[in-house]
Image (cartoon, rainbow over all chains, first blue to last red; front, top):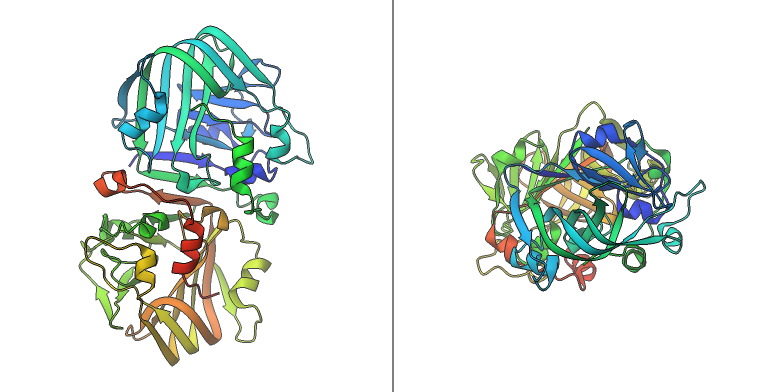
Length: 238
Length: 238
């Protein structure tokens, strides 16, 4: 009974519901590994070994130690006895896509955490928005990107089946953080040496919704063109 | 922390994954009220007060007391202290759709259980399929329908937001069972007197997937036209 826990939906972010509706203290009860953002869609969060780091749009990485800090969106899990050690060799053609295909995880939620030496990393960081919040598509037009060469670090995040797109980011949703915790964000592209770490598939997906939040209760999801907007707004690493 | 628990997905059923992958004993741990089917897409299940009833395609209703009976798909929940008593008056124009709009539940998972005297009820019952299983669209072309007049009973089921279509049946997914437990199935249409009962919204949606089932691991979801197929295959009451 391993569970992926997600607070909020991609659909909400698409519509500009960026208010913080859960604390990181609460999120961490459901996982010590994962990804997210902060209230106002303020940057890219990576949760690693139970520690919360935020890549902000300046390019700086902040260690979030005040866990009363809130977020509109987070996805976390615990690795457990079902975690599988894996190596992604530098010369393994097809990378994570091929690995996922070989492992037949196309219909499952999976968590990946892979560490190693990266020859090149390209990340993107959502800039903090102020109320009244823009849509995710509007934010996406204005997101700084950063690149680094010869950097040790970890790529970490989830694979989710296409069936759940809209609720989640379908396919890969990976963030990156350097070993020295000074460079991190939403992973757009990379080349790397051998990567080593763990992955796990999950039989339970627990979606937690902010049903007491008035903006959540009020809003109307624009289903028309949701898929296209997601494609436009969400760069993926693979 | 009220939770809707669902085993399996509508997407799986669309692709003909009708094998029983969970027992009703296990499902009932997560709710005493809800809907589902049996292995082979054998009929329409309604769970009421913790009892499992199956409307089968002959029109007969069976009380399922052997809880080792399995299902590919079930959605259940417990009403708790957040349940709200409600009346749906016979003359209330717009019915459940208007009620849902007034209560602003468009973005939430909600459970409804409403009892009363029905002037007319029309139901549909999926016939049992044998392996190799057909797709849901193929089954949908061959589903018997039944009608009853002046019948006391309960309509029961879920409202789910459009965002989750494919994982769930978006909108209304309601089943009906008569008080004497002899008439029941997937609710297509009704006219009724005053209906009284409860509804509840949920902050947690727990999707449980049969990740140890080889057919589940193997299959490829046809996302193209999924929405259209769902529309064609799933009649709804509202």
